[in-house]
Structure formats: structure tokens, C-alpha cells
Image (cartoon, rainbow, N blue to C red; front, side, top):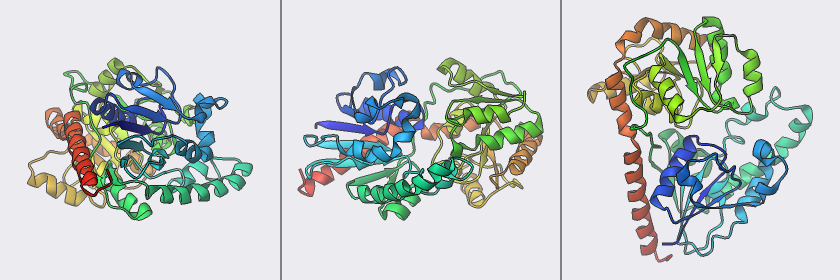
Length: 394
């Protein structure tokens, strides 16, 4: 097969890029199409691909201000010529799924999320407290266009893969399409438990609005407990202003530092409503419990401690299923996305932290190992490509 892989942009190694890395391992000879590429920011597996960028790459200040060009992204992604490919595998959280393919090309799209900027998180990105009055007048016009384009372009995809049940439900709501759920990969060989531990809490995240790092900062300002934040993003300057001295910003770190922080932290803090969330599983692979907002992908990856007074809707059934499988708790949920609720959860955890066992937490994370993801994706692609051929398109 002649294969093309399409990914929104290549500016750093986050959750979506860890999925992309596996796709590149499955198809090392594929061409990799993307809106823009910041060289040296990706893993060697991705950097070694034949990378082809769009006209977005040449726009002013694109390396730092590429999100400002969002209205141009659909035009840019549609200009890629994918006529000669047998298989297109798109990895999409924005516009990558919208590439135009020929009738004989099988298009499989791995959806990290429908375009969150213009759907349920529109207010988090473009609310009154996020942008000035001029942008508030202009952005609604583009947002309406992007919603229409997002729905229309979903009809170009032959087979959908969702990264979680949570995202599968949103695909069904916005696109009216069914999808198969294949959870993203966790490198459980890289992240290992440590015999040593420390008293700090940890976040590893892009500093974007929907990650709700502001909640964690407010909570830990009140608690006075040490918190390390690994990551960068457009909210960094504002977040640093909010933080007291007990909160340390470390920017993005090497794997060596990341591994050590995961393994030694007291617990991992996860206050956002995520589509899936690989970082909580990296923490669990390191044997560390997670304190998470009980909504979204966290309900699929964290096993709440039984009888927790901080349990949320859906966690009771999760506890029962886990108990039936002989699984052990891996974290604590808090039920409201508020500073007060997170403070309560951390204080509750402080009193029960001894109940969590690192080896049993890690055992749960092994269900999401990189090898599992790679096999599931290879099997799915093979099955659907053969089905596509049998339908007579090839």
C-alpha cells in the first residue's frame, strides 16, 4: 500500500503525538502531512519521516502564534494532494480528518476529539475573560464556519476510531457517526515505580485553558502543599502570576526528569475534563495514585477508591466492575470542577494515601501498554482496508 499519515501540527510531544509515533512505526515508509512542523520538537521516529507541510508553515510568527491562524486551517488541510494513496490514516484533534481523498482511497481517522475550540469548550477559549472586545465580535463568525466545516468534513471519513468512550459519544453527537474505541498508548517500560518517594504533588500538562491548571494553583495556594507543574502553553504567564512560592513551574523536561518526577510524586493532579488523558496513566505506570476531576476520560482510566465520599456519577458502577475483576483503587475523584472541591479531595487523599499500593496501581496501567495499542491499531487497519476492498472501492 501507498500510505499517507496526516496530523494537525508537529510542535511538541504530547498525547496525540505519542499515538502518531506508533502510527509512524506501523508505516515507517509513509508520507507524513501536517500543517506545520517545528524541527527538533518531535521524537526521532517522527522526525525521520518524510514530512510535508502546508502554507501555514510560511506565515509570520507561526512557531508561537499558529493558533491565531485557526480560520485558515481547513483551507490548508484541503490543499494536500492525496490522490495517489491507497490508505490515509489521519490523527485529528482539529482539522487533520478533513483532508480530501480520492474514491479509491481508504481513509481511517483516529479522533482525539472533535474540534474542541468551537464545540463544548468554545467559552473556555473565547469567553469574555479570554479575548478582547474586537475578537469577541469577529470570532463568532469564524466559529460558525468552522462548526459547519467540521461536520461536513466528517463525511469524508470511511472509518472512525475514537480514543475513548467519551470521545465516541461526542463523535456520535456532532458527526452522527459510529466509531470503534482504541485507547491511546502508555510507555509502561519507560515509566516505572521507584523505591523512593517525596511529598510533592505533580501535574504534567500543556498550559491551555481547558486543562484547568488554574484550579490546581488556587487549590494548592490554599493548601500550602508543594506542587510541581511540568509543561508550557499560552496560559503560562497568567498562571505564574497566580501561583504562590509552593508551586514550581518546570516547563517541558527531558524523559529523565519526567520519569523521576512521576515516580517520586505523592500523587498526580488532573483537574481538567479530558478526552482521554495519557498523563494519569503514565503516573499510574509509575505506581502513583491520581486525584482527578470525575468526568471525561478519567472515568475510563482511574479506579476510584471504594466508598469514597467524593465519588461522582459513574464511579459507583466503575467501583463495582473493578471489584468484580479483582482490581484495586488507583485514585480519588472530585465531583465539582472547582477549587474547593479539589482542596477537599487532596485533604481526603492525605488521610488515606497509605491505602494505595504502587505495584497494584502499575498493574492497572499495563492494560494500556504501547504494545496493546499498536496491535489493536494494526488489526483494525488491516480489517477495515480489506473490508474497503471487498466493497469494490479499490
